[in-house]
Amino acid sequence: MLDFHLPTLEDKPWIDEIFEGTQYFGCFCTFATLWLWKERYFTEVARFGDCLLLRGVDDEQNVYYMYPMGKKYDVRTAIEALREDAAAKGTSLMIYCAEKWQCDELRETFPGEFEFEEQRGDFDYIYRSEDLVHLSGKKYHAKRNHISKFIRSYPDWQYENIDDANALECIEFASSLLESTIVGLDREEVSELCLENSAIASALRHFETLGMAGGLLRVGGRVVAITIGEPINSRVFVTHFEKADTDYDGAYTMINNQFAINRLSGYEYINREEDMDKEGLRRAKLSYYPAILLEKFSARDISENT
Image (cartoon, rainbow, N blue to C red; front, side, top):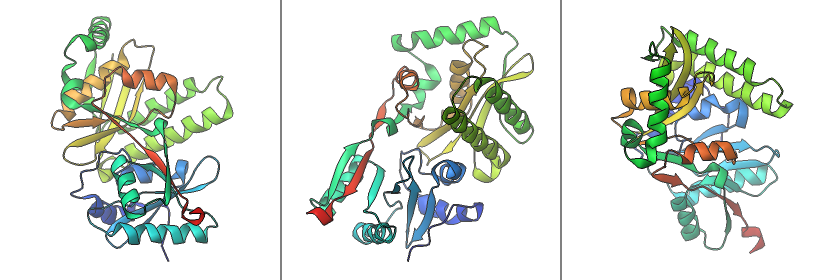
C-alpha cells in the first residue's frame, strides 16, 4: 500500500535524491514546488522504490496523479501501483500534466488503455537565459524601452540578491501588495492570491533550507519588486514568484532582466511556469518569446472500457 502524505521538510532529502541527476524541464519537478503549494493543490507524495509518486485533488474535487518521476524505475509497475491506489479511492486513474514523452511511454507500455487530452493552461514557458539577459534584437525592442524608461524615471534604483538580511522586507512587500490588489476582487480570486502570498512567505522564511534564489529592486530604498525561484537541475532554473508595484512603470520588466543578469546567466534555460489559461498572463509570457512551450496532457485510464 502506498504511503501518500502531504510533504514535510523532512521529506526533502529523499525527494532531492530522486530528482538528482534527472534532466526534467517541468516547473513542478522540485521539492520546493511540492511543499510550497501543498495547501493549494493538496499534493501528496509517496516513495515507490526509486521513484516519486504524486497524488492531488483538483478544483472539482477529483483525485488525480502525476506521472512517476525519477531516474530509473519500471513504468508498468509504477503505473499499476497508481491504478490500485485510484481504485481504492473509488475512481479510475487520471494523470495530469504528462509531457509528450511520458504520453508516448504510456502508449507503448499500455497500448489503447489511456485517452489523452491537451492541457494548454499548464504548458510551461521556457526561455533561453541568454535571451532574458541580453534582450537582443527587434523582438525585444519594447522590453528594452521599458527598462530605459525605468532607469530614467528612477535613477536611484538598486538591485539586490535576496538573502536572510532582506527576506523579511520581501515578505512585508508581498503582503502590502496583496492588501492593495484584492480590493474589489471576488472571493475565489482573493483566496487564490492569499494562498500565493502564503507560499511566497514560506519560501522566504525557509529560503536557504529550500535552496531558493531571488532578487529585489529598490527605489529610494523601498522594495518595489521581488522575484524568487530555484534550480530544477544544472541546465534549468524555474522562477516561481514575481511581484512588482505597478505604480513603478517598468518594474516587472526590470526585475526580470536584472535577476537574469545577476543570477541566471549560468543556466541554459529559465522556466517561467504556466499561464493557467489567463489571457493577460498568456500575452505577457508570449511577449518574451519562449524557446520551448512544454506541452502537458491529461491521461485518463480507459482500460476498463476496452
